[in-house]
Amino acid sequence: MEPDFGTMNETDVREILVRPLLDRLGYKHGTSANIRTEVTLRYASHFLGRKNPKNDPPLVGRADYVCDATSYGRWVVEVKAPQHALTQDDVEQAHTYSAHPEIAASYFLLTNGREYRLYATGKLDAPVLAWVHADTEKNILNLFNVVSYEALKKLAHLVRPDPGKPLGRHLPSRLQIVGGDVRYGEHHSNHPLMQNVNAISGTIAAVIGGTVGRADDGRLHAVVSIRSPFQELIPLLRAAGMESFEFFSASEHFSDSIEQPTILQNVTQTRVDRGLRIPLMRGGPELALPFGFESSVYTEATGYVDKDRFCGALAFSYQYRFFDRGRSGIPQLDMLVASSPPVATLDGEGTFDLRFVPDR
Image (cartoon, rainbow, N blue to C red; front, top):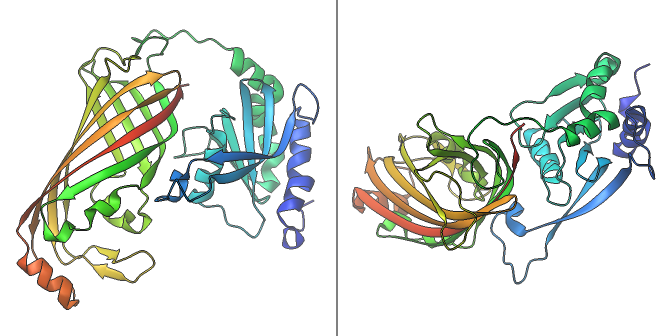
């Protein structure tokens, strides 16, 4: 019988629907297949963008359920109320719990009772399984095969041959990037439109995924996706193709020595036409971009492997060309756009800290 979702809250979903499901999958509190509830996790302040590390407290999240199969095999369940429509932000929130270093889960389940989505950690583009409550029984065998106590025990102990060339010492031939951050340092520009660019300094972008492997020619190859601390600029970053970045290195392997780091480079060419609508400031009204621009972005990442992390320093170099300059309707901005040089440079620095797991 279908539950009365109209009268249920998040706690009802947890206790009436989710806990019995976990029980069927073999998990019980206080057993070797233990269930931990409302597990408190602390995060660095990068999950909210720009923060002051001296004054701002650490962020805290709570994973609704952590299901342990072994000390290194587990999955996470994040529950929402039935009235809450599941969003990509909810997927990313659940992923932060699953990918947290204290959890390191293989999978995570997101549900509001009406809808269920099971994801593999680090793969947020599409769920492994997705179903509505009425179809739970049709999917229960699939769930048993993926996240039951017995299935996760087998997964944790499974050793798969890896015929590919290792990426480095104690590394397989492919890796998934499952978290981390990019911390931006000082930035400088010679252009009037970018005089406030050093506001970037101190901001922190969350790393939300990616892969590491080798290109067809054998070079080290990494694809890194980030979530900008400037969410109001997402339309601009998306139009410029600057949400995901490809890095290459001629080095044969990733170094685990801080004295002899690995150097990777990214070169991105972008073009954005006049008229793209973006907010002038966070929370403000949208403005049609009064000019188009082309840019060439060179990024160099210098780092080393430390267990399940790749960390180091970044150097940025941007070259811009502005064209098709028009009017925005804001006199001060229009005057600045009209009188500005057609080319600009922007240089900056930063650090990065990426966390990875073997690619399954």
